[in-house]
View 1 (cartoon, rainbow, N blue to C red):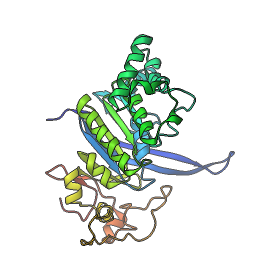
View 2 (cartoon, rainbow, N blue to C red):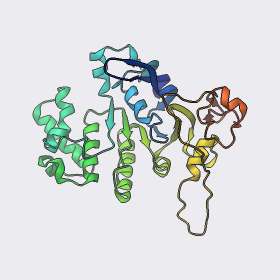
View 3 (tube, helix red, strand yellow):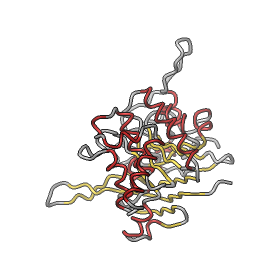
Length: 323
């Protein structure tokens, strides 16, 4: 049985809305509401959903880059919300971020050697010569050469820059990489190269990933389990095969039906969703998806569904779904 690395329970994050500089509004943005997520060692968990559903907020809350409104986070047996700033700083070396934009995530004024060595400098790891040796090793690991260390970010392509970002994330030998849409800004052919690199690194170093993406084809390719989010809530979670072959939540079914099929003969009918995504400032009562769901019943409009877990571990938050 796999060992649990991360367990986030009932995570909520609400951002207050300001009406003006002098007056505070009582309204708040419900970015996350009682989200539960677990990641095991050497596991890749994909997180998918529309823009604004709370994926990136969840990633930042897990690292405590922003504080949760409520909930608990346990990482490697340690309760993160109980740690002080210094203790959290020491813990954060074990969980690193790979950002979406490889152009803005690298300091254009620094050489690649300085960029990758920065985490080592901050945590005072080794001597200068040892840090330089570590940088050269990391460049080789991500498919670049030690000679690239003396160049600036603008001298590289988008895919190469993302490799540099991955090398920086690996510098402190983390246990968990949180990848926030790391391939969405890249060409399709380069996306495949970066995904294959991440899979190779996971096997080589025994890493765990929280992998955030919009593209379901990307999520399916890399993930062991998939979490589907909608308007700040986790609506379905299961293995990659279960999510794609036996989706239970109507929102998941709609997402999968919209995936283009690369076959001119085979036709796929997409599930049309009516209306717009509701505002996170004033989310709907009951099931948050009921305003767009083609199967919504009266219960869906008044009672919020709980995330129910089936015998195979496939969980869904839907009154009408069968486990």
